[in-house]
Image (cartoon, rainbow, N blue to C red; front, side):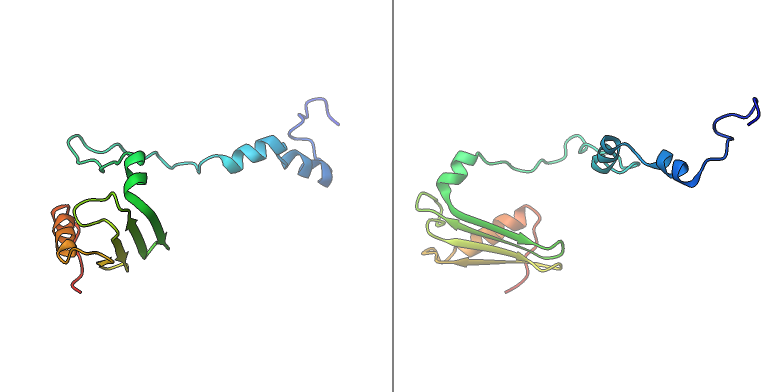
Length: 134
């Protein structure tokens, strides 16, 4: 071996070369758990943009008996069963919203209020949700 030859220039046996390429297990785990490079965090909403409404979880627990949600990335379903403390005709009713990738459908089951579906349609339309005709 020449005196001027550096460690990087020195030929390595095949086993030694491979060992230098392997990562420490902790470094490998950190690499696998880290977010992919080049993905920026989502931008904050513009000033004055409407925010999503929120609901107090305690109130939701009092008003809803059951809530079920399903989706596969293209289609989705939300089924809400309201309890006896719900108001505006929702007491005991089951509201089902279904999205098939193109349109949203609304169905109301077990309600004593015959006009409940119409009122819900109007409220959804006021928020920009277009419902499919039944």
